[in-house]
Image (cartoon, rainbow, N blue to C red; front, side):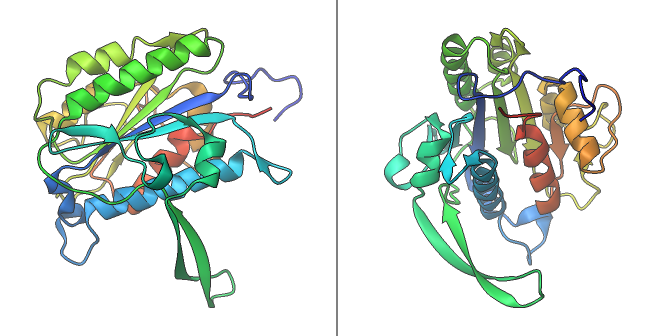
Length: 281
């Protein structure tokens, strides 16, 4: 950073933490293979694995001198089969929003997987799991967004000088419990001293067309519900636009926190840019 340059966002600290809430579609359709191909894992598996990896990356970003400091409060809400509840497993089951240090020290389990290392050799890698891949019943998205709005509002009241909350919704279909516009607009009215809460959406589809990532227009969004979620998605704040540029993405003015027809690489990019701060003290 150039010395004395103005910050693109307020600094995140333990007294002014960030807040990230993930909404995870766990309806029956999430059991289908990603992007309509039979040799791909299910959307539920892809979403859960990407979220677990993102949570681990956030923990690493908050680590200082062997300890995980509470720069973030995080939560994951699953919705499916008329059930809207915490998506966290193990001892954290039922928790809706927690300091990241609790998340760090309480995964549901540690899995060991064989992965290709930097030296091109297979090595065993520890893989912490907080969120499991589930799929059942309908898609009560409206209730999930309402719950996220309530949580974000309470958190903003407790941390009024923090960066605004970020809510990231990962889904493959339209809500089955009403019109999502009203709870989404209420959510986006939550504010801190630094602006309004961000509501971002990532939509899986069965299409094999090119993914759409952080668009500024509806071009390439094929279905009506995808276009609605694009409309309801917040514009990326300046520090996220800069984060995207750092990762090699050039975004158009007015780019929104929205992805459509996502694959695994798009999902990882979306979650990374949508959560990482400009600076932590």
